[in-house]
Amino acid sequence: MRIKNIRERPISLSDPMSNAGISYLHMTASAVAIDIDAGEKGIVTGYGFSSVGRYAQSGLIAERFAPRLMACEELEGADGGLDPVRAWASMMTNEKAGGDGDRAGAIGVLDMALWDAAAKIEGMPLWQLLSERFNEQKYHKHVPVYATGGHYYPDGDVNALMEEVKGYLDQGFKTIKIKCGQNDIADDCARIEAALSLLDYDGSRLAVDVNCMCSTSRETQEMADAYSPFKLAWIEEPGHPHDFELLTALTKYYDGPIATGENLFSMSETYNLLSYGGLRSDRDLVQVDPALSYGIFEYTRIIALMEAGKWSRSQLVPHAGHLLAYHAVAGLQLGAHEIAARPDFLLGGLHDGVEIADGEGTLPQSSGIGFETHGKLWEVLKTV
Ligand code: MG
Image (cartoon, rainbow, N blue to C red; front, top):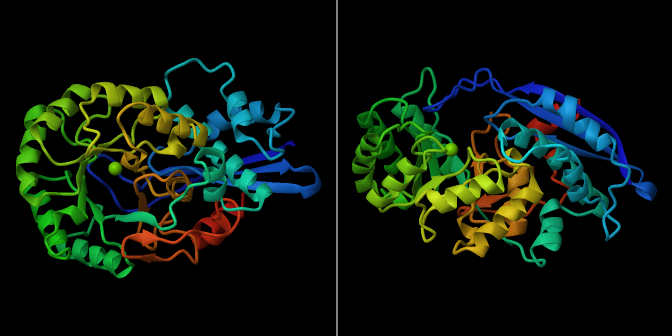
């Protein structure tokens, strides 16, 4: 069993939305297709699509990781199926420790395509394969989900934000995440109050993502003072992802849950976060994104790392809401899945046929990751 061909194409995600840190007008992602010679099963094609927020990785894929995969002479595992962990080891050949960065996303999107192919070869959805290989055949029968949105738009205002949140409630979501931090604290509070007015003023149903807007402890404390009365589900990414001193100070000052980790890209970076970030295992959430962090194998090591300490895998809530993460949340029994819920966004929504009700999603049944059953993404991927 070996790879016959690897194709990658950068795709524009151009969108008018922005958060406190970045605009999506010039954002790109890598779309990947990998053909596997699966012997009697013929040629099986696995697909990958980068997670959002870190750009296409065409150069790294073309120069280093695709050639190393093509050089792999055998990818069959002990059970006779495709073993993406063997492929992962070959991609990491001659890569020094540390310096994860964009490399982790380049490997992550290739790893995604390999897992898609591996599940297709087994004739099962990826959540089932992950459950069998890594989770003693346990899985979520109902997948906990929340809607993410509430970005800033050039012509946006609080009324438009409320319309957006209403749309997510109509889709069956119970918990919503919105963006704050682009303007002043008064503007943040107006946005939070507007969203809460649609959520029975229940702060446990609203999360707020400030996308690293705070640089000093004074700023985090001002934010905590302003947000505390709302008793939010969590505050996300308060400061720079490597500023553990700032994060520790905030977790000592603010009782409510904090979520972070979407800008950390490996087990070792997660180890540092858990060791030095001051996070509290009884309430805080770790949002490392498997597609940006070397893929599924590294993520299973992160789960093992957390469970070796005092953390539960239910505190893992992966960033971004791509289809790979939905399978990981389901098959590895993670805390919840983030869904980019705006219907017209390229990565928005889930597979056709997956239903959301009461804050939970049903399990997709098509084999692999199921990109073929996500209308918008498949329009792009089928051209690769
Ligand atoms: Mg975030």
